[in-house]
Length: 230
Image 1 (tube, rainbow, N blue to C red):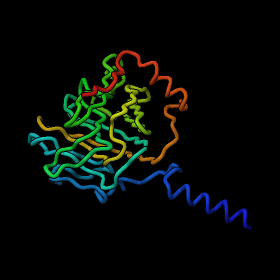
Image 2 (cartoon, rainbow, N blue to C red; image 1 turned 45 degrees about the horizontal axis):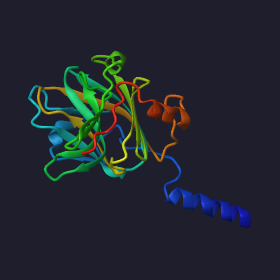
Image 3 (cartoon, rainbow, N blue to C red; image 1 turned 45 degrees about the vertical axis):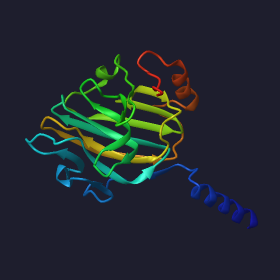
Image 4 (cartoon, rainbow, N blue to C red; image 1 turned 60 degrees about the vertical axis):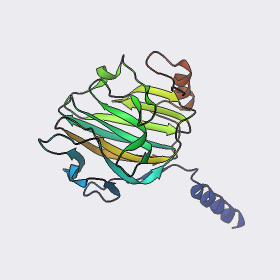
């Protein structure tokens, strides 16, 4: 009995200190509970998905829908569709929400010529962009699966089952918020669905283990760009 109590106490300690991975429901598929924006008129839930649009009107500046809880180490999986495909959007993570509505931090980019790139919004700008493969992976005007794995200073992005960015960013943020973007400019609709968040995940992705993912970081092939340090 004492051994059982000790085991349970140890398990509770590990859970409380955040060392065990845990899935978190961040979108209930019905409404935007747990999310907020400076202007909620851009955001709605339709057919179980989060939609960012202003109909046939232009988007007045970048608009962000913020998940209220912060994340540190995580894996986020979701599907994204853009109409028209030439539009632009992005997924902020480990980001700061500014009072003026701006976002500062990492962005997994979305948009023609930008899918699968890692951008630093209102900061260091382009951190990594794989020009050779990202465009070939896409399903224009259809659903595209996006995966983001961030553990410590290591970040991997994947589109439709293939890694587009692998980066070790020693000066990057380790905690912040997630938000979904609809980019300022042309009338458009961006749709996000099937959001799955795993906190403190194991370092594995697309059937690869930690050693295999770290090998990609070390090889740094063309298109995996090191962060710019001021």
